Amino acid sequence: MWCLMTDANNIVFLNGQYMPLSEAKISPMDRGFLFGDGIYEVVPSYNTKLVGFALHIQRLKDGLDAIGIKLYMGLNEWREIAQNLMDKNGGGNLGLYFHVSRGADNKRSHAFPEHIQATVFAYAFGIEAVPLINKQNVKQFRVTSTEDLRWKRCNIKSTSLLGNVMHFQESRNKGVQETLLFNQSNELTEASACNVFMVKNGVVITPALDHQLLPGITRCMLLDILRKEGSLQVQERVVNMTEVRDADEVWLTSSSKEIVPVVELDGQPVGNGTVGDIWQFAQLLYSANKYNY
Ligand code: PDD
Image: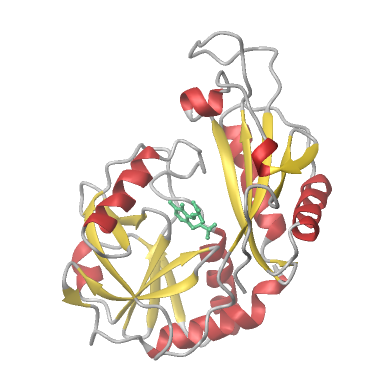
């Protein structure tokens, strides 16, 4: 179910208070605005059931630690905000966006100010219902590829997303849905807003975690679910461009999309150009287990 939310009936959280989006205001001196100095999360919920909540909040805390923002909010406080946003915005299928910036100072200085309070913002937006696990009806992605031109701290879920935004827009300009990113050694990192998996001869392969990619929660859950089920071999390792071009299947993963099959890369079919059987198996398994996280 899509939720029709206007600014006036979308109730958001800002610095301890709930209010309509149209009334939420922050200072233009906020470092999130001036420097992209902040961390964010997107958590999916389906009929008020959250997916991977504790994992998302742990990643948020890791990000805040990595950039030195001190915020004393525990899992339960975040959970209360999530519950309130779902309740106040009518439940249904909602993505919950959490954003913490370093806060606003009265002057612009690159150095971290000592005595400012972090800005905490959260809001809910409608997401698509649980995807149909059906090879014929599933939304299939066509993608292009390019050199990854972002920074070298892509493991931090920073609100400084211009590099990602520019890569994403490249795909829009080409009439496709995403851009796969390769480093200077032609190794796969991720996509502009998703992690990437490939399948070859029944083996599920994804780049190992390092500073070049986000430790995606969907990626982490999917790997765990596949390993526990045990019938497919799973590898986290370096994945080079030739392998991706020769893959039987390519998938994208993200919280709001779950597992998306890619059928075309740079104008060439992926595998036989149709949605693969292993995608179907993986998405079924993911759907059956995602509320356990
Ligand atoms: N994007 N890599 C990047 C660069 C991302 O922006 C995302 C998520 C992922 C997947 O992470 P996860 O499985 O934890 O959602 C990988 C979110 C949804 C966004 O920016 O809206």
